Each structure stands twice: as C-alpha cells, then as structure tokens.
Image 1 (cartoon, rainbow, N blue to C red):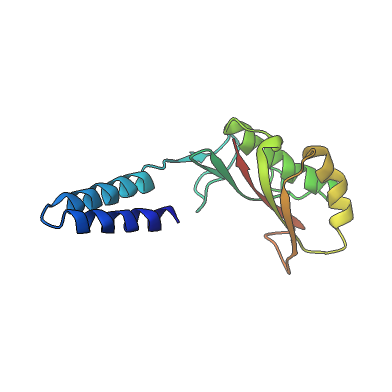
Image 2 (cartoon, helix red, strand yellow):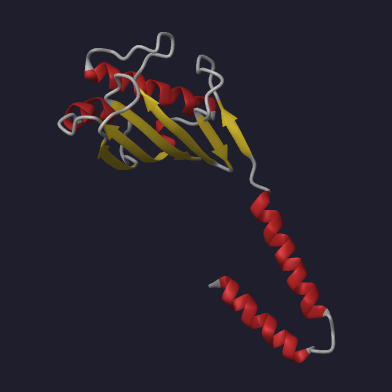
Length: 164
C-alpha cells in the first residue's frame, strides 16, 4: 500500500520535472535504502552449552528480536536417551527449549508460537498437563500435529518462535 503511494507520487514528480534527473535519483535512493534494510538483519546462532556441535542446524537462531528455536525432542542432552514416562519426555523437551530461550535473554513468556508434533494423537491431554506449567496466560498460538515417526524413540518434538 505504502509502496503504491510512493510510485504514484514519483509519477507525479516525473511529470512535473521530466527534464531533470531528479526522479531517477529518488528511485535509486529508494532502491538502495530498501536493499540496505533487507540485508541489514543480523542472524545470531544460539547454542547453549551441552548442545551437540556439528549438526546441520542450530538449536536457536536470533534474527532481529525474533528467536526461532529448532524442534526439540525429549531426549536427555547428556545421554541422548528418551525417558520411558511420556510426561518426563515432555518436561525434558521443554527444559531444553528453556535453555535456548535463556541463552537468547528470553523466557517462556516471550514465546508467540509453538508447533508440537506427536506420534500418538491420544497424548495431547497428557502433554497439556506438563505444557501448562511452562506457558502461562496469555499462552502462545499453537499447532499440534500427528507425526508417523520422530527421530529415535521420541514421541514428541516441539519448536517455538519467541519475540522480545
């Protein structure tokens, strides 16, 4: 909408000053400014201690004031083992997300979106019992989807987006 107004304004200026190169100069300045704004966003990898190196993704990526936390499984960082009890698996998963949030200077209250993947769609009530202790009102937007299979013996994977 704003871009349309700028284009219309530039057309009026062009008609009024067809003999000058002012319109071309204004267009060059606007293009240069928009390109500089688009490329000026810095990406910072967030990797708390204890998270493995050498993976093809970061645990978290901070872009501007937005943190994208990769999907976390409920496997223990130290052993890679998935707890037998599902609620413990959910807790481990959310604790790992909390480590990434804290490393970026955020906490669960900064979360705006959550994506949950479950291998059994009978598990949401049990997952929600643990989830509610981490996410207070107003809770973030959420999608819960069924997955045929997750890595290893995982039954849950959670990814979040947080914003300062």
